[in-house]
Amino acid sequence: MDQNNNYQERRRFSRVEFDADVQLVQEGKHFSAKLHDISLNGVLVSTPSEYHIRTDMPCTLNVILSDQAVITMQAALVHSSSSVLGFHCTSIDMDSIVHLRRLIEINLGEPGAAERVLTELLRRHQML
Image: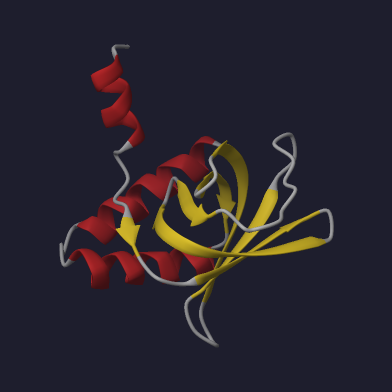
């Protein structure tokens, strides 16, 4: 696969820029970060001032949308820099899917975007 096709494959999920707090949890350790963007495929967050996240273990990400709405996903750290951490979503619960769908609908203003995300998610879960 050439580099352009690889880029398109990685970007087939709609990414939504959104300002929210994120709690990263791994092995009982909690780290706080700020959300840069989110998609069905994963999240990009600010790099916490101090953190230690293992790449060989899943991490729980809680994206706090409001007091009543949290997107929770299991994710793996796939890239890091001094400014951002990128996580790949490995699993997500149905309540979080509903919140993510609504977030995409509101922020993209593209009526079919949420349906494409939901269809892709269901396809991925059927493959597991």
